[in-house]
Amino acid sequence: MSNPVQPLKEIFLKSVEAVQPQRLIRNQVKVTDRHLVVKGDAYELRKPCYLVGFGKAVLGMATEIEAVLRDDLQRGVVVVPSGIFENYRKPCSSKLQYMEGGENNLPDLNAQEGAAVIKELVEKLTEEDLLIVLISGGGSALLPLPVPPIKLEEKLDVVKAMARRGASIRELNCLRKQISLLKGGGLAEVAYPCRTISLVLSDIVGDPLDFIASAPTVPNRDPPGSAIQVLKKYCLYEAIPDSLRRVLEDGSQVSRNMELVVNEEYRHVRNYIIGSNYLNLKLVFIRCVVAGNNTIAAEAAKEEAINRGFQSVIVSTEIDGDVNRISKIYARMACNLAAVITDPGRRDKARVFLEGAASELRAGKRFVAEVLDMDYSRPLCLIFAGEPTVVVSGSGKGGRNQQLALAFSVEVNNLGIKSADISFLSCGTDGMDGPTDAAGAVGTSDLVGKALAENINPVGYLSNNDSYGFYEKYNGGRNLIRIGHTGTNVMDIHVMIITPKTQ
Ligand SMILES: Nc1ncnc2c1ncn2[C@@H]1O[C@H](COP(=O)(O)OP(=O)(O)O)[C@@H](O)[C@H]1O
Ligand SMILES: O=C(O)[C@H](O)COP(=O)(O)O
Image 1 (cartoon, rainbow, N blue to C red):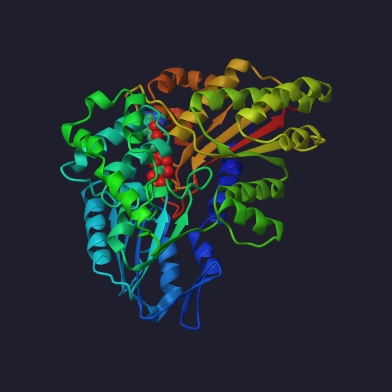
Image 2 (cartoon, protein in one colour):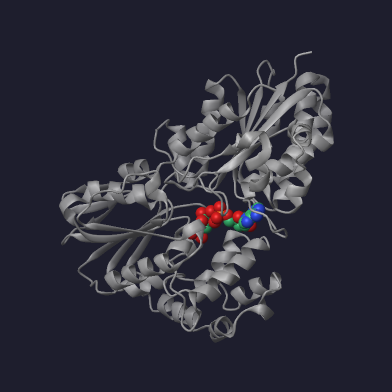
């Protein structure tokens, strides 16, 4: 197989480029006639406004907002991921204070300090002020202020344990909203009665405003016992420290929230998703270059694949669930399509499998018709986007993308596909997969054979959740995708290339 990494990496990089947040701000936020205009809604600029931000994509959002507001910006605090300034120059700003925190996407003392500075700024604001809140995925780790008497380490331990057991981002954030002072509407409450406008870049399937970055400016409408239920689901409730149990059982965070909603004390807040699914589809339709969430990332990947001579299809932008399950479906999909490409007479058999897979991957049946109607004169490139989960039971180092790329390689090998070469990339658009310095990795149909020839046993690494350990060794580390922080975050991109073998 010729070098599979380069084309996959370049297709992925195009998808990341398409979702840089500066463009979203530039196109959706303007200042005209003493008003701040957001997606057509105008807010009077009675005096220079304030800005706070937290998340993996807010650096670009903040620099752009500062450029838009100029003298209409008074002061701001932005908490960004530790290490982001290795890839991006720290902006020189006399008005915005940039703070780094959240090493490895986990809350830490630096992030807590950032959250405290944000709280201090926001609580002084009055009805006459205007506050802009920039929010993106990764914001949960960058705005930690545990409800007393919970300590940061206690909160961290529980969140880590839930993540290792495969909890989804909605489940994690359901808990975070109930144990954090600024989450689940907490920041909006501190800002009250200041007019507050949140600009949110979504990193969760379906763009749920009440879960992204644990919803600091959206009232928490989760049922009072929901966080306890989630902890019980992962058999963690018995093990949590007393401080957490007290806060969760007391439930005052939730009931205070309800009270404020009833009293209409959220009327000072407006939340805007920038680059929502609906908006993106509309923009693609009118062929506008504004980019948004993972639909736009997937579209850009597809376009690049076509430019590189592939036939390309977006299968789904809503991939979620367990990585093992996804890797099995993807491998069987590769197997079925490899069969069709080399023998079009196999279409009917493949159709049955693909229709089932389409519904499991929330792909919609148009994908099946599209992929089976191709003439296969060129290699096939399938694009997927979303965010699966991993149940971490081993002691190794890795992330869901590297785990998926490795699991896929093992599954494809088990299926013994002879007629085509298969290569597969799985990467986080934020550039950081789990607690590693890689965005993800590339798997191939010949990876298992080659690894065994190098005396590396992929299955052992896989079952120990040591996908990073595997990829560091395998092929001299060349299948790892290391690009550093990308300044954006719209979930993961998966790219699969199926190339018929020449007889
Ligand atoms: N050794 C490992 N192997 C595979 N996945 C892991 C490993 N360690 C952590 N993870 C997974 O990585 C996820 C966190 O990765 P991260 O890139 O920080 O996610 P996000 O950016 O979506 O918060 C967790 O859901 C966890 O299940
Ligand atoms: O990108 C991330 O770090 C995760 O998707 C979690 O982000 P959030 O909880 O801050 O939305």
